[in-house]
Length: 375
View 1: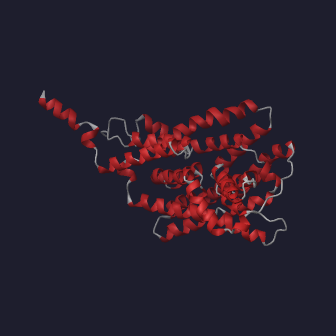
View 2 (view 1 turned 180 degrees about the vertical axis):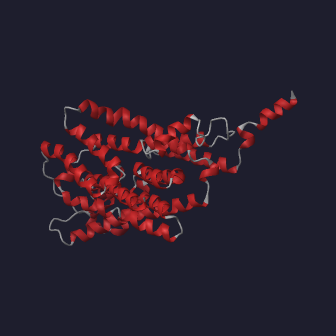
View 3 (view 1 turned 135 degrees about the vertical axis):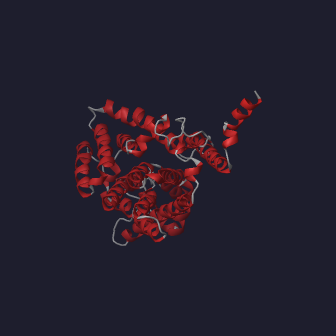
């Protein structure tokens, strides 16, 4: 009886745990705290945080419990990540929720979304210089787009062993947009620039809204065919929304489908951060490079807006450039908040949505370009 008790105790998670599991469990609790108490991307951080807890309960290999065991339930759910299924479905939901009117009303603001993608390619070169393999460097660079689904999709294709740290880094920086971006925005702009008011955009017709996803898929995916899985479903979701006759499908895409996929994506990405797999030197390097990438992307958008103002008669508030990263709609909200700190009557949110939405498209195209070069 005593031997059975000792054997039972040795088989518990308490006996098998080491300091690495404790570290990861603390990280999971921090994610849950930030999501619930601080309201930082709760729909993402709470499932990811709880997934980290699940993934770091020590278990015996061979029992079909670990996410990395072929016969486990978590492994089958994780296939939606490794096969690149979940990210396009999330893009479809985003498309069904998004109104492209502000971007269509003033297309020049799309350039800010393109400029912000500089963070992707500069960080790609930096990761190469630090010794990462080209496919790993491409996956790390995409963090600068501040688009978790895109980062997961590209990493699943190029460097599947790094999905855990890259996904956690991408979603962490997305959640911390209100903390990371304002200092960079204020550093690169003067008070006079932050006070610039934007003209009211023109009204966009229903016909334009319906035609946009059709022309958008053709223009973007002929340019970068590898972006088809992401942008194809993004524009499909938007067409379902704008066509009106498919409102029932649009409602499903932006509610039940995206909510279900978000839960599964967050849970499995979190569970993939098993201590023995996640806590490596590469993971630390990925987090550092991810922060650099996100900072460069924010700065690139702001600086490009300042450059554009040298040639435009109607000046652009350079704060809008920070919304070029594709953290929708958080970056646009940050632009609104920083702008209203200077002038409470200056409403920039509607205008910031234009580069914010174009940043989603830009990051997907950037991922497609990197994928096509790496394969």
